Image 1 (cartoon, rainbow, N blue to C red):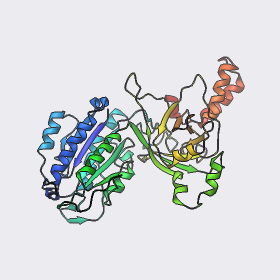
Image 2 (image 1 turned 135 degrees about the vertical axis):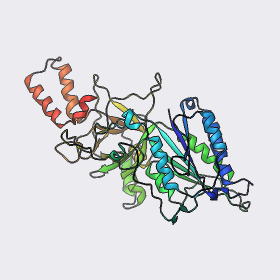
Image 3 (image 1 turned 90 degrees about the horizontal axis):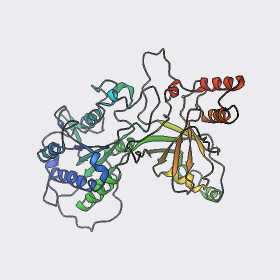
Image 4 (image 1 turned 60 degrees about the horizontal axis):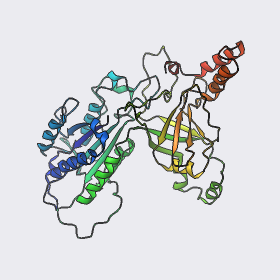
Amino acid sequence: MPILLFLIDTSASMNQRTYLGTTYLDIAKGAVEIFMKLRARDPASRGDRYMLVTFDEPPYCIKAGWKENHATFMNELKNLQASGLTTLGQALRSSFDLLNLNRLVSGIDNYGQGRNPFFLEPSILITITDGNKLTITAGVKEELHLPLNSPLPGSELTKEPFRWDQRLFALVLRLPGASPIEPEQLGSVPSDETAITQMCEVTGGRSYCVRTQRMLNQCLESLVQKIQSGVVINFEKTGPDPAPSGEDGLVDAIRPINSFASQAWHSCHKLIYVRPNPKTGVPVGHWPIPESFWPDQNSPTLPPRTSHPVVKFSCIDCEPMVIDKLPFDKYELEPSPLTQYILERKSPHSCWQVFVSNSGKYNELGHPFGYLKASTTLTCVNLFVMPYNYPVLLPLLDDLFKVHKLKPNLKWRQAFDNYLKTMPPYFLLT
């Protein structure tokens, strides 16, 4: 059930008229209606929840929240007026607080017990603004700042105001007052150059610089495609680059060593798709992504986590491991320089292990909790999430079933006890 939150700029500058004869606020209202019609084509839209927030002072900025129905949403949208300041930072904070209102009660963030990709509340926050200067009662602000203080209990457990299943997109209206003289250029819509762009990219979203009605329609089509169930992860390389493999050896040899393109795959900030179960409509999973600390039961507080986990990948080719009796989770990665690089290597029968730093008790990198692997058809890259330190556990379980017939000897028990010492205790709960 995706949440679609529209944050509409209701500052006075939204009253300016464009070459179409309508105001920016009229265009923003129309954009929301077009978006909803496009989204309604997808049968999955029946589970959508819509929210409406403006640049008014909180709590009056929330026009349609958790309890309002579709009719209330549309009525509030129709009645919006533009008369205030461009308080974008405060409005974004109010929007994220609204989205996060029930998370501590539902336990969806699972603080201190690992992060479960399959336990998510996918949210798309779409802000529509004219991109004018950020204004407050004290004057004009040059930078976008979100207030750090939040009234929500538990907000101090995450460093940022957003979560890994919440992405921000911005439609920045740049339609001129006079009809454009130059013919419209078709192609991809560029990002805007205002402060909101960086904020969008940090959450795994993007901004659009909209100069014509046709561009706006193109952006809305693109945004509808962005409604995906998934969570954003930071993938970062650890250790040396891989040895050239197969046909890719020649490609590596001719790549410029220091070019940005050749290094882009080292660090990627992308979505992993979390598909719902076709029968139940709800994602199913078994294993968490580890925390970046070893839990201390005697500590009165938990260290705050970043919104997006940092998953390190090692480029040492390994054998993919699975056994019959033990489930695993598989998530497809959103296309990125990393997925492109792995697919170009054409090695569907090897994998790269993944780690979370400081997740283990005895070493800084931690133990592997899964691996990245190209699909056998080389069409996508998947993240396999396994039990913690699976290269030690899986052979032990294989022996337990095949050799010991579920009657382990003392040597096996000792080996298993040693394994348990390396495993964060919250994995025992999964």
